[in-house]
Amino acid sequence: SGNEELLIRTYHTVCQWISVLAIPPAMILAFFAAPVLRLWTQQSDLAQSAAPMLIPLAIGNLLNTFMIVPCVLQVAHGRAGLVARLNLVAVVVMVPIIFLLVPQYGAAAAAWIWVALNMGYVLLAIPLMHRDVIPSARARWYTDDLLKPLLIGLSVSIGAFSVSSMNGNRVFEIVQLSIIVALATVLCGVSSSYPRASIYSFVRKFRKDTHA
Image 1 (tube, one colour):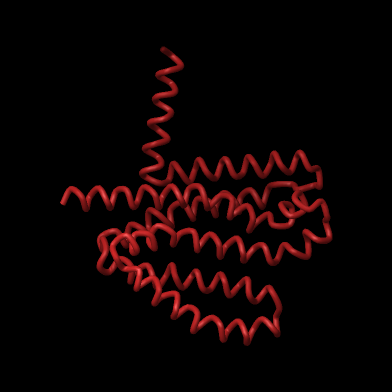
Image 2: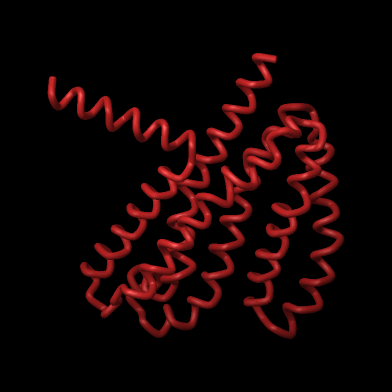
């Protein structure tokens, strides 16, 4: 029906925009954890010691961000019980793991458990969430809303990490990181169908207004 088509289009649009806006900063935090922390704290030793914690936290929070719209969709369709059951299962599984691993491996274990939890949501909860609510959107959620911008953001970050020079110059590092985020955001947007359409529309309007 027309309403379902509008729902699916809106769903993918919002999911893609969230990916486009969330992936680049998360990749920066993951690949440039130490420089970012050094810029923030102005303490090199603290930045080096805290960087291994920031990496999994950035990844876990990014994965958690991907789940926002699917969870909202479930609640809007009166399926809050599914979300509650998934969270209950997560608590039952993860709490014993936390008590087992954190005392032995410390806070780093908790951070990587956060990654594992949210990876489980993305891989296992999404199929359940789309089983009864817009099931036709599941495959596209993985390919267009998630994987395409994620691979672009990952590629840009890997390339930037391999060629960038974080030499301790505060201004130079801020400029480099800003350029990387901007480039990744634009490329992620161009790789996603709905943001791409919005970007092209904005460019056409800007050129039209400029030449008017």
